[in-house]
Image (tube, rainbow, N blue to C red):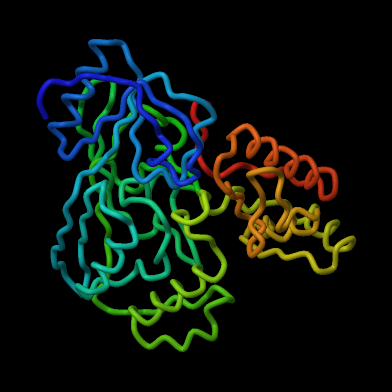
Length: 336
């Protein structure tokens, strides 16, 4: 990697919202050795380090006074187990959708419902990404990371990752303390389509690739390409409420969109709540709410992150006033 030097650099190309913010320095790392070198340099200069993949789930609320470490580690491999079990390994910097399609090409099934989710393999466990009836926590075997403070390498079993709905130990207790370098997935050589999500009932997919292609078309029809319109995908989590709250809302709003998640709790469609408050398709200056999907906040270019966060606050306020439901922002905000 050579001798490290820092100079202020723009983060605009490195996060999908595309706001003009800066870091004290941006360094690309391509190996664990690179990571150790950057961490040592940061400790010597008393600088914080922020690992970053493709920036598809990150909001920079202002300039970052430290080193942004762009995790570019590449590599993927597969091992055969018993009874059709396949262990598939992906380096943290691998593009997620590219990794999913590669796994399918190898005859390793299970990730197809997660096609076209933006980001990297290393980011997938942080958010516990999920779509169309599948969450990545159910497929991860372990996560390998480097502790930023000590440089220690840890391999954490999935059962210790404290996975929850769009949540994990990496987003909570270990937030900003580790750099994920590799993720292992337990997949199968036997394709069993998961069509439990209502929108997939008419897919008619007979193979995993066909199902992946169908999901890609659905996502492209609903969600904007970050390369063309700045966004971080779903801006809010789908809120979960109690049975009593659900029944009260259902009485007042018969068309309420909700799904039972067990133990008497219900998950509400955040996009429906936002739409009912009149925000779908709205534009305020250079930010707005996507016209095809109210769950997606967008940046049209040349705007300010303060305007986007102000719009998000307005949405949270109006949803609370109308439904008594708290909307939680899904992407990570820096600095918090």
